[in-house]
Image (cartoon, rainbow, N blue to C red; front, side):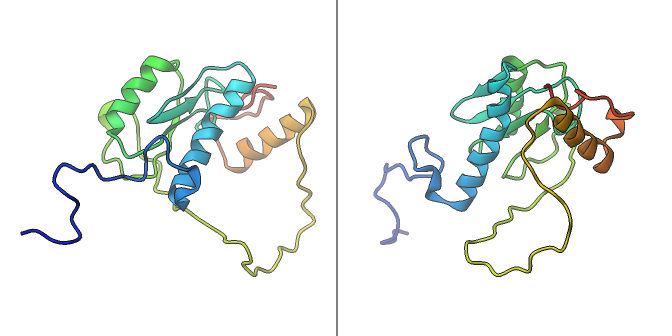
Length: 174
């Protein structure tokens, strides 16, 4: 049965994930591309392995730690193809976090385990919130001592038992 809302036969419909599409096209696209840039930018800046292609991005900052290395699909593709490509493009002897905006199914046959399904959270401009009451001081890290402090907060506070006891440089390379 034909419908007036259907495209003409043979017309390719946009998916919202085409390479030339404006990154601000949707909130999900913005979040996916932001996560992909987090996966690559730090690794690229410090000379560590990274990859940024049309369908996925990834970066390796260290040889251990669950949040150190990320692989991020940039569009809804077969996770197995991204995992295989990551094994080819990046060191395969280090752990990484596979951060997907799309449900992946069971990835244990590919050597990965499910850590959770974090939601996409958005706070739109103009949202009224009550500021937290705290004496916490958030500042940019600019030296090795500050980086070690930030590492300790993540390693001991999250916690990451596999990175304990804490040693500076275990999570972030100065």
